Length: 254
Image 1 (cartoon, one colour):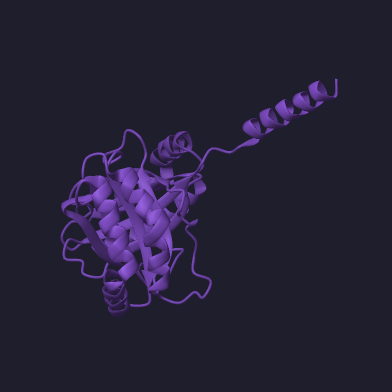
Image 2: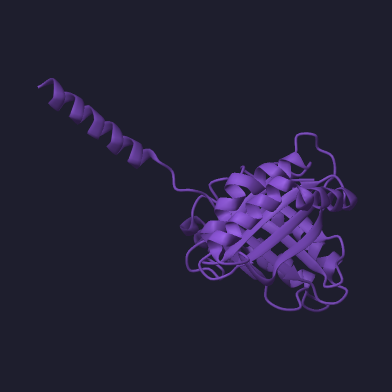
């Protein structure tokens, strides 16, 4: 009888935990390319209208950046939502909001602000990612967005290398972690892409940190072992992209 009672309690506890568990938040990386001469107007629309309207409709403004070298007039930003379904509902409500329609129309009196439709990827945090948050010191930083495209079937090995070695070595060499993501199932790159964000004190500090990281014997050993397991490089040729970025004045993180 005692065994039966304990088993029932365990089953009930397990059921309650499963029902109470919240789905993981999803994130969205969006990249806008402003039309020639329109980047300032695009940023003004975000500053004066879009950021507040996103919040009104249940989106969390995580961060907004422009590349430090921005010949292509990019605006890069990160949003989060309670779920993929919440994201769909939020964007539908945002698009129908009369204030947004009026702001968009007024901002485009002298022409469209975007050179082409925005790029968008819906992302999930990896199991080794911190929660993205503003730096408590509140000082300005250089952010870095790094995108890795793996050779076929090697995304799990790349994630393992980050989990067991790379993340710790980044810390060792003075880099701060903002967030690590992979695209969710059904998104471009879901099977072969890691997108992550680091924080540096300056572009010069970024270069110095990576020079030290690449020369670290622990990194050299971990890289060699992972590539032996993966049958060669874990990333495709030219499969590592880096963009240094500066937070906008309306970004929650600086």
